[in-house]
Length: 181
Image (spheres, one colour):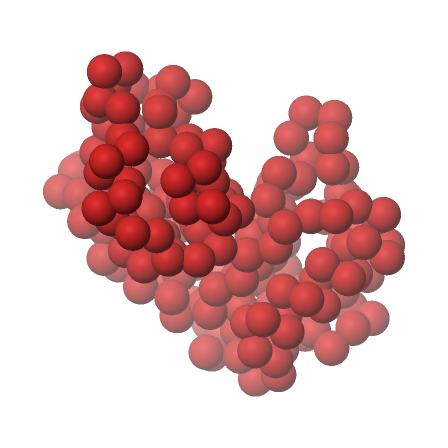
């Protein structure tokens, strides 16, 4: 059985796409998923399943639509991939600086040359490293002021993106440490 991390895009932000994580856990308990855990109210789920990443994504999207009448984009990663992301942080920063660290998860890989050609350094220069379908971002100020937010990645990559701060990502990695992949 595989262990997965599921990231829901744009749920429980403001008054839109409201999903009770307790309600979602209950709905998922009636499917082919096991060991379902949620973290925070921002759409972070850890679960086990005998499915591929694609199958997990499709089932989750169906459950969310059927139970909550919402069309929500779902990004799925294997637990080991999340643990690897945390272990291979490309920035040499101390723990105090991780408050400005983020990882953006993309639906598909993105071309680094295309990204470099699109980054606007006139506004503010934040550091980023693209690794496959993830982007590490170290902001030189508040995240909400970066020009490397989800809208940028979705426009350049022509795919869905969702971002988690470093603290949340490390907590997710801790949740899957006991699970198998």
